[in-house]
Length: 509
Ligand code: MCA
Ligand code: AMP
Image (cartoon, rainbow, N blue to C red; front, side, top):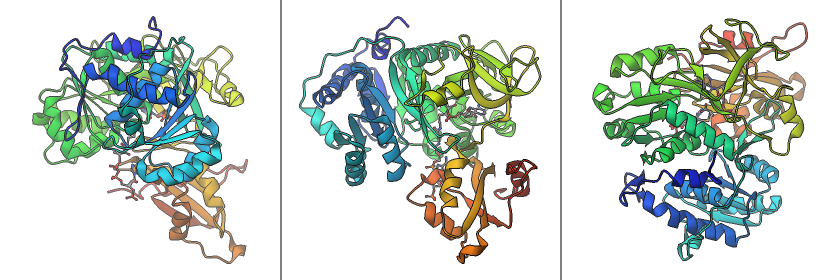
């Protein structure tokens, strides 16, 4: 990357047309490209006044809004580290993130301000600001009267631009440090690979607290100087209604199954579309095929991780988009399928996918040992995904070596839930698995062994009540089953595969 700051890189692609829109917000205030310098400059002035300097963290847990995007860009300008959090996280979860990230500023929703003040005070956070979905709150009010700060901090490629938390197999979330180089290289590669052209319009319905909606989608549009039609969330009727104005759409598989379930969705809605992309979870071949049959479009499935950004993609041009595969490693990414010791396996064999390239993160914030555990000595990052690579390099993800459930594109680590369930009075032990789910792809499911001696006849409602308020809704089990004992192998390890088989039909339509 030659730019000294990611914002500078984006700015070099802003259209000259003073009316060109960056974010077009149906029923709201749109954001022209021409306003970006001023608006982000004002937010930068506010943060600067609160003492936010390069390298300081700004933790943000807010509903999707144009101002949230401007805040991200303002952090880039200052060289501050942007740390977005899923709005579903509870106060308990936020307390951990604030304690770990140690931000100078925490921006939250107005309705969460009271609890946020308490949590922030306990974590020693100096300032709490609010931002509502409509842009209101103390953040905008504080910035409104300020002169834009004419700053674009000089950063190096290796400086951290954002920390994104991913859940950990041990139950503790890890903050993935993403550098300017990580974000810029991935954005530039994807922008070229997916053939962005002048005039492209993106329809955006993803959340913006994860890599998919924030980086993959918005960075490509920014590098293209494109307009993004910016929706507050995914609603199949709204998406169907707005698609005729768009050329590019990115979604998790649940978006596509919900669109296919919508009676008005079809080829007509997709007439102007150039590209549908899917990722964050496996896209079933049946969804790919049904989508092609209904619309004539072949979805481009790609694969990535928070720690790496995008790793592989099916071809946009010059190759087949094959359902059930995730395509080829990106041009600047090296991927190998390896055995448990990191030795590359012959093509066609199944092993763990390992990757290396400018997209691979710098490490986990405050966790050097965890970072070291996930890298090979030769610098390859161990994804924890099981894959095969065909002779021509095409990658198929066939499973996970890590104990992870992906529900509607959100990651859920069973360990985190099991630890909480095991604390419920009357529970001896538990195992959490993901089962096939028609809407979310996988449904989080708990299998619990009661503690006969405790005297309490704990039931499904009691387990769910105990989790409520402590665990984000999307992590909470959709069903809880009770068994006398968990199936174990000779080593004493719980056989989750057996549980997945036993309860496989739980969510069948
Ligand atoms: C909402 N609920 C969920 C989920 N979302 N439960 C399980 N899994 C979910 N993903 C809960 C709600 O709290 C609610 O609970 C009930 O399910 C039904 O809510 P509903 O209104 O249907 O949900 P929604 O608001 O429509 O949300 C579904 C969604 C959303 C649109 C699919 O989850 C979503 O936007 N997912 C995208 C995630 C994403 O962007 N992932 C990218 C990560 P109750 O009824 O009890 O209140 S980045 C990544 O993975 C890597 C880098 C990559 O490769 O991209
Ligand atoms: P996250 O930690 O949210 O970044 O999730 C990354 C994980 O999502 C990967 O390690 C994969 O397990 C999964 N994933 C992302 N895209 C795909 C895909 N296209 N097919 C299968 N799994 C995927």
